[in-house]
Image 1 (tube, rainbow over the protein chains, first blue to last red):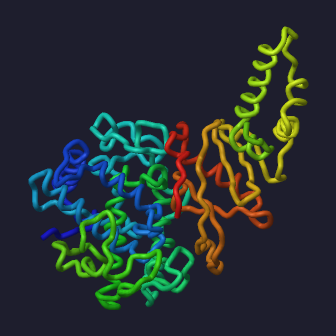
Image 2 (cartoon, each protein chain N blue to C red):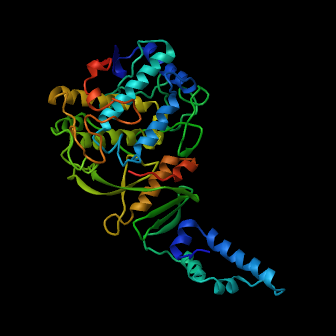
Image 3 (cartoon, chains in turn red, blue):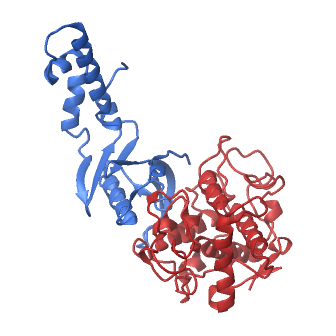
Length: 268
Length: 163
C-alpha cells in the first residue's frame, strides 16, 4: 500500500529512490511498459481517438484517466526498482516547497537542464520533443503564476462534477474548473516541456498530477466517492461511468477507479 | 498540374509555383531550340501563376505578419476557412482550434471563446479574431518563441492533432 506524501515531507532517501526509479524505467521495460510508453499515451490520448472520444483531457474522464495513468506508473516504479515502498509524491504548488532542487528534480528553472539531475549527463533523455533540444526545458514562473490557496479553495467548492457539453467550455463543472484553473495553469507555470503536448518528459508532471488527483480525492470525500458524470448511458464523444478508458485494460472504467482505497494507495 | 491559387502558394510555400515554372521551362527546352523564357514568359503560360506570385508580395489579411522576434523569424497567416498558419524560422507549427472557457487572471468574469493551441502552448489557448484579439496570432508566435528559447521547433511540432 503506497502512501503518497507531500514533497515537503519526503526524506532525502525517498527522493533519491523516486528519481532513480524513474531513470531506471527510462531504459528498462517492466509489465510491458517503459517510461516512454507514458509519453506516447499522453500524446495519443490528448487527441480525440478515431471513435471521436476525448479520453484524457477536456472531458469528464480527465480525472479518472490520469488516476489510472499514475497508478500504473507507481506500480512500474515499484517493479523496476524492486522497492515496494516507492510512491508518487504530490507537489502542493500553493505551498513553499519546490521540487526544483539539486537533490530532487534538478535546480535549473530557467532554460536547459544541462547539468545535475534530469540532465543528459545524469541519464535523462527526451522523447518526442516538439522542441529540438537534448535538454529538458523549464521556465518556471515566466508565463504564468501558480494558483493561490484561495484559488484552490474556490475551485474545490464547485459542486457539479461535470455536465453537458462535457468539454472545455463548461462553466459549472468541478472537472473543467480544476482542469483549466489549476491543472493548465501549473503546466504553464513550470513552462518549457511542461507547457507541451509531451509534458511527461518532465518528471514534475507526476508530482503535479498527483496533487490534482489528491484534490479530486478530497473533493470526492466531501461530495461523494461515486459522483462521476455522465453515468451509464450513451453520451457520444465522452467516457461514461462504465466505459473502458483507453489505452487501459478492459474494465478500467471511471467507476473502477473511483475509490483510491481499492487502488492500493492513500494520501498522507 | 492541379489548379493553384494564391492561398495554396502561401500555405505550402513557393515550391509548387517554382515546380510549375521549371516544368514549363523544361518543356520549352524540349520543344524548340529557342532560349528558355524568363519568368514573365512562364507566368503567362501557367493559368493563375502571375496572381500567385503577386500574392506572395502582399499580405492577404491585414493581420498577417512576417517579422523577427527575439532573433527568430515569425510568419503568421490568417486563413480564409478558419485555418491559421504559423512558421517559426521557416518551420511549421500545427495549430488546433478549440472552444474553451477562459478564466482571466485579473479576476474579470470567465467567458467562452475560441482559442488556438499547438504542441508548445498545449494548456494555454490564445484567442485570434478580427476584433479584440486581432493580434492573437502574433501573441501566440511570441509565446512559442519564448518557450523555444535558443532551440528550434522539432519536426513533430508540425503534426496535426484533433481535439
